[in-house]
Length: 183
Image 1 (cartoon, rainbow, N blue to C red):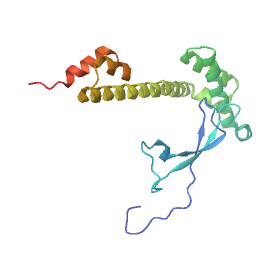
Image 2: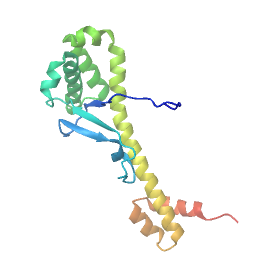
Image 3: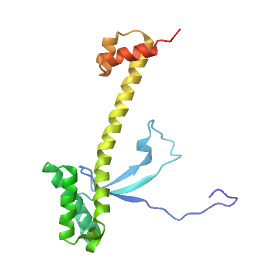
Image 4: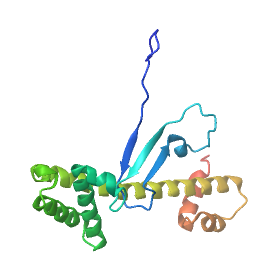
């Protein structure tokens, strides 16, 4: 790729499946530039992927053409249904995997790889809560940054800053204390 001669690639088509609970369309295009903090209309760099929704009830014609995909969608759907019944996540996953074994999903693969599949499913569902936590951490950091900026401007009271940022007053006061230069 980085030599004296140019590397030539045939057309590359990237796609993926989307299997999380969502109201997304059956198919859509995912653009890397949508994740950029600042909009870039230069077109200098763009990557897209065609995403196919495989949630239960979506793209059924496609899903039913591939038994492995069909079994996977049903397994994930069963876990989601169990969660809706207020089962604890570990119990929801184990019940769904045991059901998949009884139904001989993936021609016995689920039975052979039971522990790995349970671990993978638990990791994926833990990932969802981790992402929610990271988003909350990001909001917290932004609020603290805004509070520091307001404190540096010295135009608002700590009470006003707490109200505006949603931070507890005590935290704003601590930020104020930390921002005072030591002599």
